[in-house]
Image (cartoon, rainbow, N blue to C red):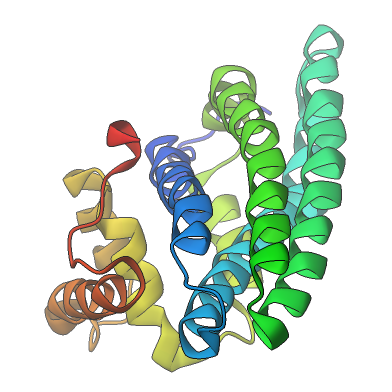
Amino acid sequence: MGITSEPYFDGREMYMLHDMFRREFGLMPGLVRNVSTGDLERAGIIASHVESVATVLHHHHHGEDEFVWPMLAERVPAELEPFVHLMEEQHEKVAKAAAEVDEAIATWRDRATGESRQALAEALDRLLPLLGEHLSAEEEHVVPLMESHITATEWNRIVQAGAAGADPESLPLGFGMLMYEGDPEVVDIAIANMPPEARPVIRQMAAEAFAAYAERVHGTPTPPRSTEL
């Protein structure tokens, strides 16, 4: 990419999202294993939580596959392209493991047996190292490329495309999940980019939405952070 006066993508946005994935996915096996056999109500709560976070991950990876990797493949020097291909390969592995989680959820949600609970927990156990490896590799190899080859405007378009069709009522919770471990300066920037009417209220709304949700799912409004797992 040629010289531009536009600001580039801020990698701290990716770290904020990745920390949310590390935290929520990292806590999932324990959440599942702590559901009593036959407790369909609790199984439904946790199953919906797993599905919701997995959906965010799917949309995030789809946006990268559709927009980020093609941009980088076109713009980065040839010797750096293998990192882009590595990301694509890791996405495929994560998607395959996530599909096994989806399949296990359906059975557990309907029955809440000890066997179906164990199958889901083990599927999550298999997903975690693949996801962790991918997030770390992306931060080490690809985020620096994005910070010098993708503008903030281009990244915002990608984020907006991924959020298209999302339920507006779910946005405070989604932002609250990111805010929980987010860099305060990045959170401030994100709020500044929101519609004027949302800026004065979104911080409190998001924090309250996540606290209530975490209480329901994790049993506390302040679940362990990714660095504590």
